[in-house]
Length: 172
Image 1 (cartoon, rainbow, N blue to C red):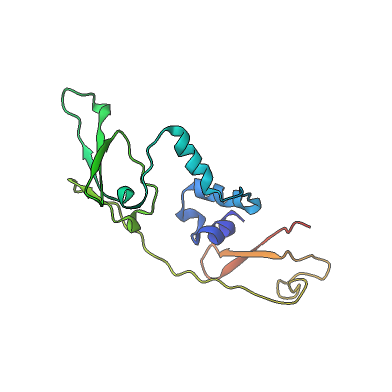
Image 2: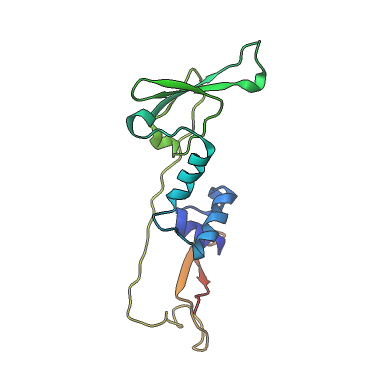
């Protein structure tokens, strides 16, 4: 069931994502939202932290440079220079890149390391629209006394030969 929900939300198998992602996917089954959008939560956290927030051209990061501590400073006091598209830069104690790296156009400066690209995958979505009040018992090989759920997801069979079907109980 977790794999089916993870596939539905992120188009990836459960073994291809971090476990936290699958937990988030499961939490989205009965998700809640706040008026004005859930993005307000992150914005409020940033405002309360005292962080300076830049948007538009000033906030468009183009390069990161890891500044190595000198012998006179603590080894744990490494810093990062963050350069922006408008030609400015600032030094920070820590940097969190909260965007898909492959789309960010951010360059890691003065390093031979790089962030690996991931392979794109084709996603096929099938939506079935019907005026039937219930999915077919015969199609799923169940007797007429079994109530086939309205939410049905698939996941690969262990040998990947064909999709397995996972049916989620529908709330009444």
